[in-house]
Length: 131
Image (cartoon, rainbow, N blue to C red):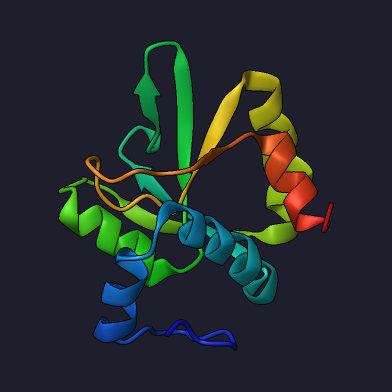
């Protein structure tokens, strides 16, 4: 399954397995792997980072690995590229800003017809701190 250590490249089999994980398992993977990798992956489009808008909520999709973010881009035909953010910068700058703006985080989404878990910036910060 998913590598215990940080890997630059994931095999196709690992990517396919990860894409089939439940929403809860994908959330756990994000929290555990970004701590090991010391970075988190986002998708950057032509006009900023890709966000989901659903009614009055805005959500930022986040990924534990570049290859999983790229798979999301490919299967959803998004015009964009994968961008990594150092975990320190993400926790110290991004999370407070997202919380202030009411932006939630979608934890490693796959496709729009699959259940995805959403966390608040505050909840993700607490999970990363082991609370």
